[in-house]
Image 1 (cartoon, one colour):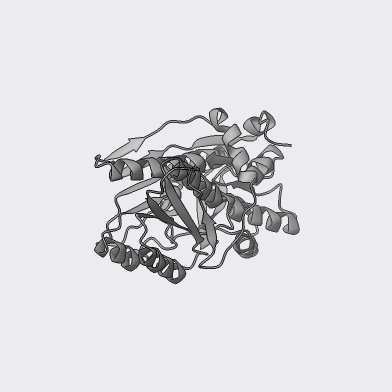
Image 2: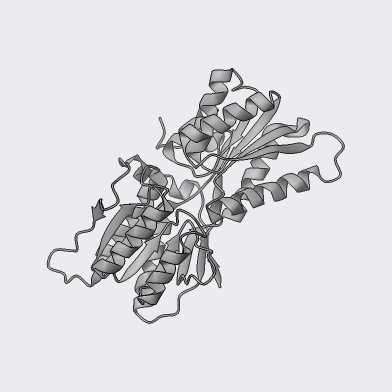
Length: 332
């Protein structure tokens, strides 16, 4: 069963100020813990392992999980998976040793994390995922909360068509294929591009490379640089998140091709929005990580209460363009 919740860009401008909170990586055992309300009885612990706290998007999810769970009397332990599936598997083992009531994951790998999830299943500890799915066979996840990434990918495709106009051209996709969410983004993007190309003799958009940028700035820079060398007439880049897009933008500026190549990204982080306002990125389908975190906790509380919960809740994205950036009170 799927549930979709509609939001608009402007309704959530103020929510993204949360991104400005500091973030950073952490050791496997390090993390942040919630404090239950003074005088309230602690009901249990929730263990949270995120893909990386080095990305503000996941920090916002973790912060909202922590604050929402505290309202219900649950302590939260947040740890950084650091994009390392074995490290994340060890963190799940640690959660089980500590006797957590539930586990929330942003899987570092949508398939390889399956064995660790099965351990939690065997221990009777419910597992929930948010933003990133676990799709390993036999691994049981109670519910998943995330963006409607297929819909967001289609918005990104529409934006690329608008950016390149009737000329079309060659496009690089900067991927992170380990994440199911990114698979869906790229799928939606390609569906729109293929529909645009159908029946055209001229003005086609050709995806000439689809490379793993790791979801981080440094690798986004490298794959953009490599692709420009192989395809000096590159016209567009679709990056699956803002960090990889900003890395690609730096590579374009170094090569003097910032006016030649249009970038469409994904996320709507403050730095990405600022780049859109300044014309450095063409557009972003934006996500709402605060809502993802809160909704995940709501489902856990409902599950503990014996209620039926949906297997998936999808929150649609909304396209953020330069016009939105110029009217965004949260930007400089």
